[in-house]
Length: 440
Image (cartoon, rainbow, N blue to C red; front, side, top):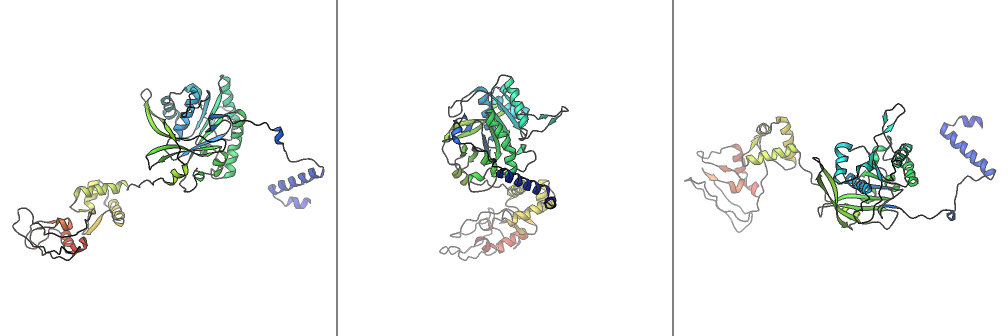
């Protein structure tokens, strides 16, 4: 037996030892499972920070794409708790303190002005900057440091204040190097803190970004599904692009009937010389988050700035053509850089290359139902007849070459008088000789 145990690695050895211990306990008739009948468990009502939306002792997630007000929403919560100010639906709010843990926004130039814009009592809102090491230095915080969170709560209570809210922005930023896509590591990071929240009676609101996946809204919260599974309620900040409005909508609520959503906007206020944004709630919304996410119109991809600049240069020059070198000179770019961009734009039909190193932009071609005689330029005493067949769309026609003929209605180019049967450029000759291809 000893030889076989020695051959096992440490993990297997521990597992085997545990089996032997359990087997010995069973043989002695000693219980190994810890059970408790529900007759000994007292029923307890849910305590709400925000009725039917954010529960005391539980994790709530605010999720959304960047720039849509998730952090603004958490600061709005902190401001209301600091003042005991009612929530947007009129439900009461408990007066107390908030602790913020943030890895993205600067406390001085971002968080404080935003709290001032909300007219918060900033003496009741604190930020954890780190954990003090024995040598006096500050160590970074993470969600596993439950004792440090408890110490912060005790400091608040020593001032005679109640503590009601912990904000973590974002949750992914405080996993102590753990993989946010690993269910096991995410649960390990969240379990201790959530147990502390349940014991010490405060709410946790954590920020999460949405991923780019499609389908069920439950899987839109970035990272491991363990974030959504551990949270008792999840709220999405999103934009309804069909109706051009911002929405705060429930994705999940495991604890109650669920409060409805809201429309909102981001406003700004002067806070003593600093213009700071704040969230403004603008009435209820009963939209379904799944429907909103499924009907979002994709943002139109704007052309690269260099391509936009090329199009603008060619538009200014139209109807004249420009060489690659001329375009580069106007833009102040290298000829190679412009040439590369033009090649890509040509493939997408954004520019036309008639030849001879010249470039132009496409022109809209109006469907032709009849052709009329081409008018000579003003001041010209030369004319040319144009024969048309008006009964057939796209019918044949002849247009003998003239010494001075405006053909702008056909090709967008003008051949000014320049002697007998002479074109002003090779491009004009190419366009004229291929005029039927242009029209039809």
